[in-house]
Amino acid sequence: MRVLVTGGAGFIGSNFVLRTRDTRSDWSMTVLDKMTYAAHPETLAQVLHDGSGMVTLVKGDVADQALVDDLVADHDLVVHFAAESHNDNGLDEPTPFIESNIVGTFRLLEAVRRHDKRIHHISTDEVYGDLELDDPYRFTESTPVNPSSPYSASKASADLLVRAWIRSFGIRATLSNCSNNYGPRQHVEKFIPRQITNILEGMKPKLYGSGRNVRDWIHVDDHNDAVVAIIEQGRLGETYLIGADGERNNLQIVQVLLELMQQPADWYDLVNDRPGHDLRYAIDSSKLQRETDWRPRYADLRAGLEQTIEWYRQNADWWRTAKSATERTYARLGR
Ligand code: NAD
Ligand code: DAU
Image 1 (cartoon, helix red, strand yellow):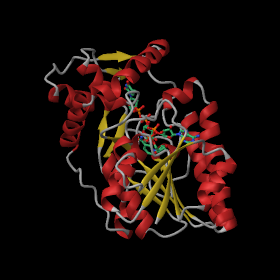
Image 2 (cartoon, protein in one colour; image 1 turned 180 degrees about the vertical axis):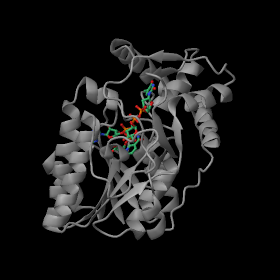
Image 3 (cartoon, helix red, strand yellow; image 1 turned 120 degrees about the horizontal axis):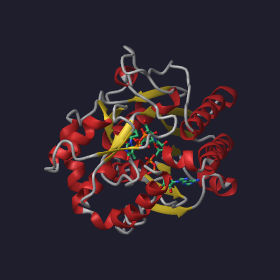
Image 4 (spheres, rainbow, N blue to C red; image 1 turned 90 degrees about the vertical axis):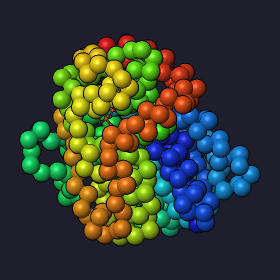
């Protein structure tokens, strides 16, 4: 099968390419990536130059209709990860979020429609807005979209376009909305890598507001295995929520990192809150588990964090340049 992976040089997309190259040896993959600040050129080097030709890279924009048309025509399946993904950036400058996340998805859908190809669209639990800390329910596939931020509004818009193209034009598509990912190769702007690399560099972790906001953490390999399960076993036209029952507040995560990295439990700073900061996300993934054989393998968040810390320890060359640029941006934002 010929698979076009958009955003395959970013965090989740690159882990997807590296993992499926081992687990799906009959897939040849073309990565289409704009190589923004979030893509790391070294990440895919090992598979791009392994001599097999099974993974190739095209540098380009998903919003470039002519390019996307040519590429989609040559592939059987599109797995669409490409997006601007960081909330703090969307609050600072929303324009690329509209262009890449909404217009980019629109262009892909048009190509998929013209060439009658299958697409799997990757999305986020943030499209559902947030929950109260004591809400007794979690997000399901029938929760109405109610996004709060430029990023989540752009992803909700993209999801609605995919759903409309399914219903109006009968395109062969599936969607998934996943909770917060962690694991190797995540950009240091994101919460967990920022705190790990702060500690490695002798700086205190930075918690927004009170540190009580809750996220539902899942290891990136569990996310990507679920994506493959949906591609192979999911029903066309359907949305699946992906989550691994990993709810923790941000302070709890920082305290685990501090303990695993032999620092005092109160060695952190509370900094300015993110504007409009969503309070809590929580995913009910029972539909996915009912309809596919996917089950999360990283049930132990602490063990997953330990593995992630080790990866950042061993790969300082991968993150060091981005770290200084990222911290300059956070200093400007007062966070
Ligand atoms: P990331 O920022 O690490 O990577 C995004 C990749 O997309 C980068 O390689 C970037 O260069 C590329 N890209 C951006 N705009 C592009 C464009 N116009 N054309 C082509 N390539 C472009 O993001 P990530 O965390 O890996 O997220 C990947 C996808 O998963 C996104 O769609 C995101 O909304 C979704 N998602 C992320 C999480 C999470 O916790 N990180 C959770 C659920 C869903
Ligand atoms: O829920 C899925 C989403 O998870 C994805 O769609 C997004 O692409 C991904 O970035 C992530 O969004 P969040 O905004 O939840 O992730 P982030 O890593 O930016 O922040 C996680 C939590 O930690 C959030 O409550 C904000 C807080 N935070 C973040 C940073 C960077 C801090 O307290 N301190 C920080 O330094």
